[in-house]
Length: 579
Ligand SMILES: Nc1ncnc2c1ncn2[C@@H]1O[C@H](COP(=O)(O)OP(=O)(O)O)[C@@H](O)[C@H]1O
Ligand SMILES: [Mg+2]
Image (cartoon, rainbow, N blue to C red):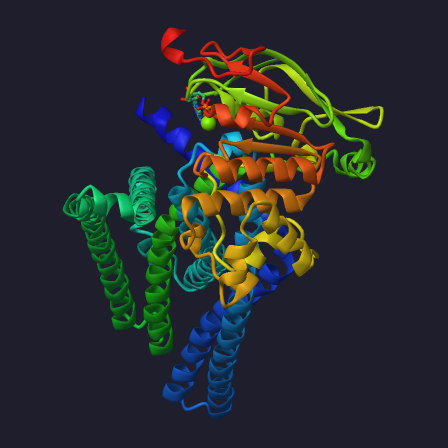
């Protein structure tokens, strides 16, 4: 059982490293150069040690030619080593910033391109955590780990070869600690991996918690939850500390055992070298060579061993990135056709929904059931129905944000048919129910959907939603700040602003999800009749709980608790108590 678990862990690590290598393949050349520098540094340092043996022997024997040559070699190798060190540091810096930035960009685009339905399962704090923390772990790991693993391994092999060449017993002594590592490696990898996972997850929780708390600061204050939240935050961070300390203890123990082993090996080599020197079996130069090399051997061995935690944490980070990049991406595959049809959409668009059934993956309950509906150009459809019956879900299916489990939704444009997908979103203007703005000015927020819109166009759409006076009264006019999430506006102003943006987009279908719920009936009526008059061919699909809205609609349908859409001929919202 235990073995099986370890095997699984090792397999996962293998898969994660394969992903990393797949990703960094494009930096092959730079990494290769860097490794070559590392190798040079190893060769130089081992070479320097060998040269100093000859230097000492020459001093003791009084051979001048060897002396000068050896001295020149020692100095030359030392200088070269320093130069190579500097060069490789420079390359690391260049490479690590590039890999880091590109990896972050790529993962960001993968995450935002992922199907909304699937990526939405993750808390945004957790996504941020992976985008920041795990990406930098992987980047720095790749940059430091791969080259240093190469050069450490090479230093080890080279120094071992030198020892083996001069003295086999010494080589054997130097390897004394190896069996310990081989025996303990599985246990180490498993423990380190668990710690890494635990601490990354905890970090995600802390991030998610603080993000949510900051976003809901108003609620926290209003409900007098400040102490509770501060306490919860402290608890979360305390838990983090406990995990951290547990691991540190493990780490310290590990280092102690390693140092102890290293000391044993060093003294064994030292004793052996003194014994050989005493018996005049080796020269003083060889003795110093042995001492230096055995030091190198033990240190490169233990730094190889200390690469294990890094290897594991890089791989854990990679695994967590893979988790959020594995989803199918929205690639706007039907873009060309959608754009061509949109250009021909002057005569209006027909929405054709047939037999659409939808359920959220995590619940399995059908929220929409067998919905069939055809909406002609210029129609204004109101979808009413009790809260939670599926009105918003229906709009999201039309937008291609959610995918029907069965049935089919399409648009008919100029005699052609195009299936609903991410590519057909350009046919829609959407005002979501829980909508917010981006931080920035009014003009910036509006131009998001039409970058080349003139100020006149902006004022025109603001006029349609009765906000032109409000904006004109501001000293900065269109350049007034609307604040993070539109916090400088009242709820009703925010809703009208969002409608203005949707109108500015100029798409043939407009989806309004309870988008006028915060307006007084008078303003609501004016706004609705304005946008209808502005483009009579436009389809407007809106959801509402207010009878006053229905007067502006050509058709009213009820979203029932079973998720069916049934027409209401009398155009009044049923009083649900009587249902
Ligand atoms: N992301 C989701 N995952 C699972 N269930 C959801 C999700 N979003 C909404 N639901 C459920 O789907 C049903 C319909 O929700 P919604 O379309 O928002 O209702 P309405 O807009 O009519 O008030 C509700 O029962 C709600 O709990
Ligand atoms: Mg809703």
